Length: 117
Image (cartoon, rainbow, N blue to C red; front, side, top):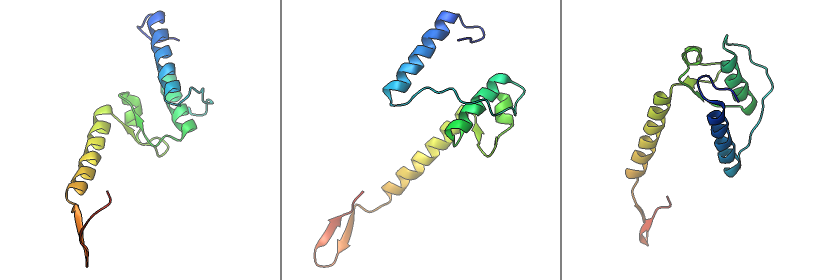
């Protein structure tokens, strides 16, 4: 494994940890076919090949070339901060909806009945 500016042993250790995490979570490792050639940067195209192969709904990247091309083939490319902000907003929205739901409903003849959550 080659990572610019990273000693080979360190890059290999990192790769091994990622493989272990993928396998422990019932995930897997794949080498997607080379089908995307939209970017000048070979490594960016590898990311896009993987996204195309797995049907990614979005790509999170700090790469300026990728984020500058968003959406790529209909797939949004978000910077990490934008992704986190959107995920937090969705979590807050969901939580607000649960907070404003009544805990009980009135059932004629039986008084209050807990709502299923």
